Amino acid sequence: STAELRLARNTEIAGPRDFQSSSWLAALPSIGISYLGSDESDGTDETEISLNLPLKSPFGRQQDHSLQTLAESLASVEQNRRRLYVSGLIREALWLARTEQTRLQFANRKIELLEQLVERQQTLFEARSASRYSMLVAQQELARARLAKNDQQQSLAQWRQRYRQLTGMGSLPAAIEEPALSGDNPWHSHPELKLLELAWEQQRARIQASSAKAAPWNLSLRAVNLDNPQLEENQYGLALEVPLSVFDTGAESSRNEWQQGAREFAQQRDELQLALDGRWQQLTRESGYLAQRQALLDDAQAIGKQLIGESQSLLSQNEIGSEIWIRRLLESLDTEAEAAINTVLIGQNRAMRRQAAGVPL
Image 1 (cartoon, rainbow, N blue to C red):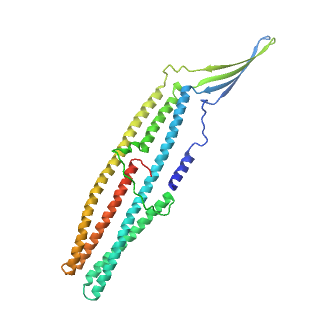
Image 2: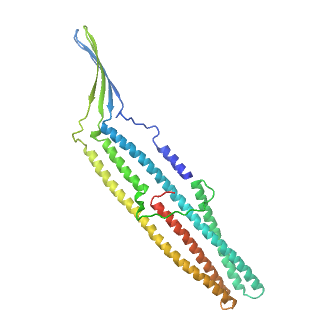
């Protein structure tokens, strides 16, 4: 989507494009030059040139491999986190737009019904078969319905524009329903939690890579020239300096850094797990509430339709006033609209539960 491409560009700009690490060298090579001149006439002058190569130890290369693997895993999980973030924005725009579409649909039905009622009451008033009061009640309800429709059109246009900004697509999709998740705590695989765990593994690997056990091996390539009046000689060789890592000489600062990192990781993990579980439990409770509410609204809707039929009969017999009949008619339509909107909210809750579990679109 457009938002994902923008996030990807931002990540690329922030990334170390030109940074490369050597798989063998622990630091920059160095060249050493020394000259020792004799103060004796028949003494020997010594000239030495050395190339010093700080090589990574096997343990150091092992930590480099671990850090590289962790970096790749972090990049993959970070991509999933960005996808989840964009999915949350898209889900919000889609379902709020669907809610406004449903409200607008019933607003149009209410306006159409009220226009018919106004015309009917106008005709009855002109024929002196009804009072002007009933006509004014219908006209007032029509004005309110048109005002509500105007607000809903504005809100729908905003969410459509939001969806267009996020996806680059001009029209909203017709099918946005998502399947329900199974399991009690599917948030255990949430990208935020994975990122936190991988970041702690990366920090541990960095501490290991900077420990004394990962000290480099120093390889020196040497060339020596010995010069005296009787003989000039060139000598070539190498020297290898290997730290004895069998001795435990870890710095106290590394141990403190490890302990502090472990405490911070445990605290952040607990806080994140509580937040993820709290959000999941909240949406689960909301799901049960919406299901119960839908059943009650369906019952109320069925009773409302019966009331419309009864009130229509009573109106024809002049047993109830026109205002009461209009109110009953509008209440029935409002209950039908509320049931339809609640159905949309159930689908939205299902999508938000997938969002809370860390499942992107």
